[in-house]
Length: 228
Ligand code: IYR
Image (cartoon, rainbow, N blue to C red):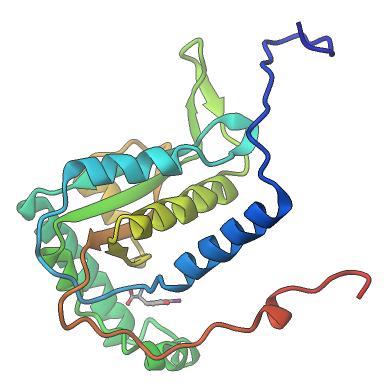
């Protein structure tokens, strides 16, 4: 018996509490590990076991979410024909963006240091594409439609955990949001209650992979204590 009265089932939660120096050490290590992650656009075609995809989605599926509705669906694709259809559709949209002038000049200038183009050939190279769908509504326990809450926040957090899990397995990815991306719903036959959120090409980095020489903003710019 717990100490409080509840109207719904509760269980006790007492995760092991590391001593302070152990906690700090783990924090240092976790940060150091995440600091080595980069978004990748040059992938090896080497196979990646299906189990790694399952593990990454299992990690993402632990994310906190609005009313614990878990408003996400991860669709994992290995079929070369489906990947190719996605590439063709994504490149079609991106050609309109880059070459057709749909991207405003300021946006194009912001992207220049990343050297992104309408070429999305990595979508044919990677062993896996995972498309994440955000569910505006889902089904309740009684099978009736149920509205979801904080959908963007919930799915964004889950995607962050997914990215970290992939990195822990030595896999690389990229948060690709081909714009517009409704074609993903069509190709993958998703219902109208879901909208494509992010497309993740997933694989090992190519042996000759390069990434832009970026630095991250210093902690002092990311964090402020209040009052100082
Ligand atoms: N969706 C386009 C453009 C693009 C936009 C941003 I903001 C980026 O950080 C990178 C790319 C593309 O995928 O090329």
